Length: 119
Image 1 (cartoon, rainbow, N blue to C red):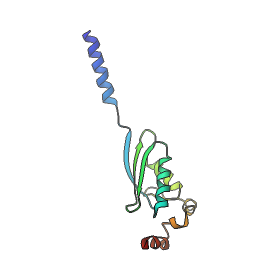
Image 2: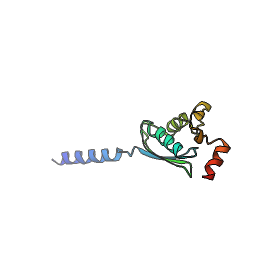
Image 3: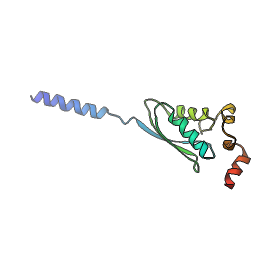
Image 4: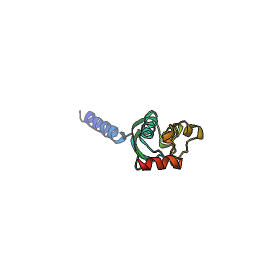
């Protein structure tokens, strides 16, 4: 009977020791300018397999992420965001993707930036 208890305890300790928190947290710098950008950035991140949460702040230009690191990584999420037209610190959106965003979301354009600063 003692042997069974010892084996059981060793098994429990082994399982507990190998259990990992697979959720990772990261923050990405993402260029954007308005609420429509926020929705587009967050949607692109969330649609990336393994991303559980994405919140982009218009003021700080940072996207806070929670994701399953067994399913995705920061580079993949950055690429998903760049694919919808927003530059990240790691990956710049293609001209085609950037030009596909709404005219008020053209964050590289100084005139658009000034228009948003006035609001």
